[in-house]
Amino acid sequence: MKPINGLSMIRPGAALRALVLAAACGTGFAATLAHAESRDAIVKAVKFDDIADIGKQLKNGLDPNLTDERGNPLIVIAAREKSDKVAEALASAPNVDLEKTDPAGENALMMASLNGDLPLVKFLVDKGAEVSKKGWTALHYAATNGHDDVVSYLLDKSAYIDAGSPNGTTPLMMAARGNHDTTVTLLLDQGADPAIKNQVGVTALEFAKHYQAPDAVKILSTRTVRIGDGRPASGAGGQNSAK
Image (cartoon, rainbow, N blue to C red; front, side):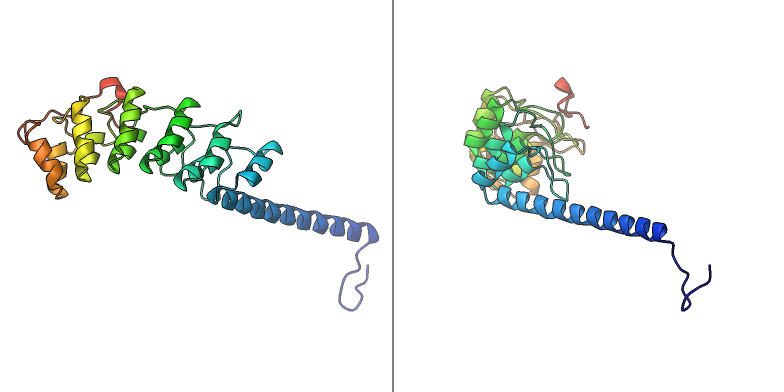
């Protein structure tokens, strides 16, 4: 076929196929863009605790396990932002995964515990959230910020008091690090072992001294073994072993 004005003539059938393909590609891009914008709007509603919007979305089939573009599950975002109404709605969805974590390995119960959000902690546990697990736990997170009411509740729900993080760090160590004297006392009174060392050989007392936590140092100095005599973190129940 001879070229016209330097261009090859395209048969009508080929041209039609090209137009259909271009339209399909355009539709696909538009759909992808619309999906991204829709997800962004959902995440925004979660952060602002817009229960009316999220409740409607759930009724219309919203996946409660949806994540944002960075892999953060909606329920973890809700717990982190203290969006309790939305968090409760998501936790009540039939197919929700309460143990789903963000890229840092944090789940909704851990975030609620870190915030000292006892009502949400209780709600999540009542819905079946796991209190004790390998690695960092909700108890670690509650102790880190000195939330005694959450610590007490989790212990009442059989949280393992000497749970070890991936490097063997215990909730008592985290409480000592933050100089949370009442939390340190609470954990000791409930049976936390101050003699445990993490994988680098550090005890709760050494944590307190290193992080210049005078109140924790004072308490632990009277209720712990001499520095250097502490036992290594055990693997009791798998809780003190690394992942």
